[in-house]
Image (cartoon, rainbow, N blue to C red; front, side):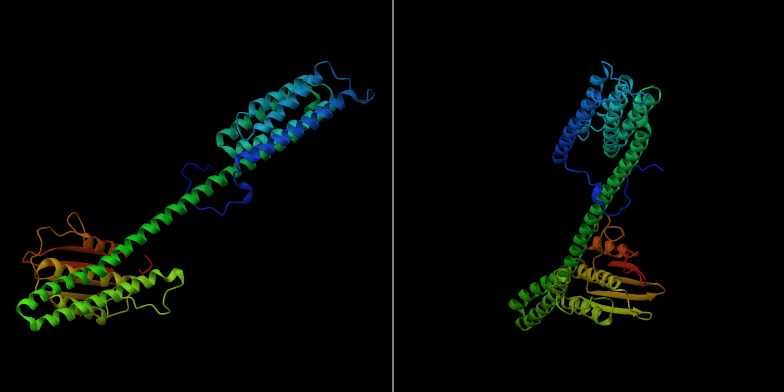
Length: 419
């Protein structure tokens, strides 16, 4: 099974320490040092093998005139391959294979052939691993170059043929390990990008949620305060005895909005460890919560009639809060925009869902019914739609043919709080 390295998104385990791609500069220096040491040691052993041989040993003949230069050249080329394998993982495969072929063809002295052959196998294993771990195409180049070297060895009567089995096993294993490391890196990087995208989405969703909460808390409160402030100014000039009621309404509404704002800030402080020991209860569709909304709206000069049908049940906190905010926003719009004298709030508990309907008798709107925040919907209507949709519900809002405006929403009443 092949892995699409450009689009792999499946989460993977934490990266293994040895699969990290090493920083280039320190490891390039390590390779250069290893190449220098290996070239020096191997070259010294080649010279020793050329001058210290047993003429009575089987097949051990004195080196020919070209055997020593060929062996030393192969040693030097292989050392260069080792030093440059990180800078050009695929580019060094050709010179490595060429050095192996030249060694096989030009070295007929068994002792020298074994020494240089071992050096060639070691360098070939490291170069194959690096190329396979770098990129898929580089791994294929390395495997092809290795195959060329194996074929040349098997087709030649040279004395280094004894190293071919070690080369096949070593380079094949190096290629497999390098390919596995490359795939691990790809999946780890894709998983990290996926986690980063999820984190960004979570942060964006949290910002949107907080924006909705702040809007819903502040909008209705300021709407009522604005209405009462205007009435209070009028009362001071024309009906001073009623100015105190307006100021009392402003105080009550602002205190309620401040309480909800503090509750929101307390939730935000939970992660810092500075939240209060007991958080304020989350508002919902209880009689007390709906009564507070109705009282606040009445203080804004709009009568409210609340009707509940069906057996009231405990809603999941998220669903209850979303339903509460829908009613709150609908009442706030009635106070601020519709010029309504009265609002009817209906809550119906049905099988598996809770149904909300808020209808005012105001001016209505020129726009057609839309799903709470369509092309003509405001920020508050958009917030309604987003809240309800996040729990698998739906919401519509629009004017009535006979005048007035209606907001209708339905949310699942169980099993949806984790949405």
